[in-house]
Length: 132
Length: 132
DNA sequence: ATAGAGTCTCCAGTAGCTGGAAGGTCAAGG
DNA sequence: CCTTGACCTTCCAGCTACTGGAGACTCTAT
Image 1 (cartoon, each protein chain N blue to C red):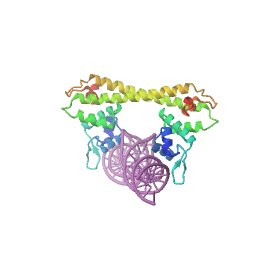
Image 2 (cartoon, chains in turn blue, cyan, green, brown; image 1 turned 45 degrees about the vertical axis):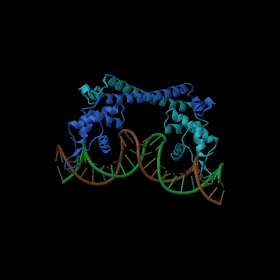
Image 3 (cartoon, helix red, strand yellow; image 1 turned 90 degrees about the vertical axis):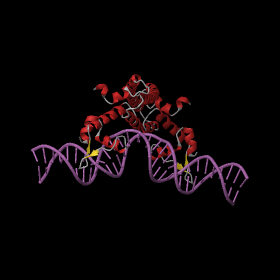
Image 4 (cartoon, chains in turn cyan, blue, yellow, red; image 1 turned 180 degrees about the vertical axis):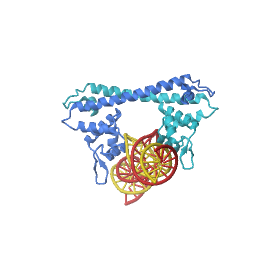
């Protein structure tokens, strides 16, 4: 299989697959005589795994760890679970941060007339007058 | 005022202030004879404005727009409000994305024993067996 | 033979900083 | 007067995770 086919079947752009090879997330692909990368079904599985893990927000580094665990028959599921829970903790942190921003921005926007006059509590608050 | 003082008073690292000058978010600072950047109270106000806007998640580009509006006495508050509302929409999108991830990862983690055995629904799902 | 699609490598750019090196400056203490 | 240490300067590199494009080659079909 050429990279384009694998790309379609894994849901990852060909560019991204080359990039993952570059950074060592996946081993270098076998090559045809003319230099094209040649893939098999296993590679498609691996790339799908990566695609799903990335889709769940795991960092590329974490995906590397998950891949290693996946391919390690003697792994302890506790290690996988720990990674997953650490990830949800990180997600929670990000959500909380975004919700804080959302609350504030929305609150400011609600108090802004939004007409052609210059008065604007949003700018006033950013300028610090709101807490002066 | 030297950059360090302004940094302390604005809440932005000196490096970041230089960076903002570099990319044109703020105009180049006046210099002393020896080449040190020299700031006044107005600059502190501006940098605080930037710091707060960044803290609310506005992109540097948006902060540039907000700064321009802030300094434009003939602005229409509608323009500011539009920016703010577009930003909340973007925040909402991100929150929704993170919540989707969170749900899935947490669900997987809950079904994983997390002991020293290798069986792990997290990996199985990432491998696609969960939906085969 | 040739057109068009696919592939190759390499370089550069995105966002928003951050760290570090090599060197100049300034104020205080001895 | 000299030195020490904190501060400032520029420039270059690196971080995350790709993405776009140039220029050149290969493969397939007509």
